[in-house]
Image (cartoon, rainbow, N blue to C red; front, top):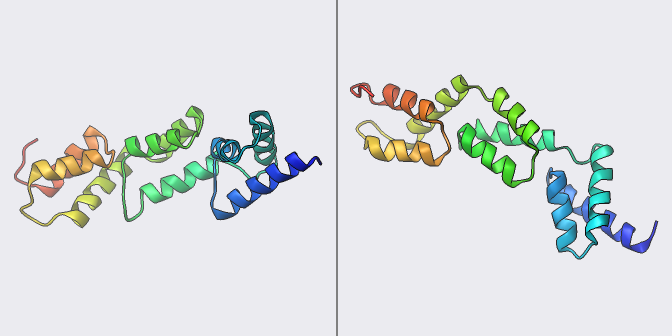
Length: 151
């Protein structure tokens, strides 16, 4: 193995030791460290083939986080995955795994965690929209949280 290839591989492994990364993130990291773009692509592809890099695993983890205590909607989840370089096919699969029903439930849970009874409805709606919840999820959560509201 050439010294350049060995250095690139070591940089990639060190980068992966801290967290799951996408193939795109590995490639960009290597390029920022001065690795030739073709070599960065080769290393990223090799690590993907060997299972050290898995965009689906990253998407799965991001989906778990989206449903966790700092709930976010499917729109923001998709944007985060896209920003990390996850492919459209994986993003589509992730959207199917995060159902509309779950998104509506998470929107309501996020409202309950953030706001008290008698809160400003406009502020609550903006909060949910900012978290990437769909229009349907926002409407559903507002109807449940503000029982006097007739949407």
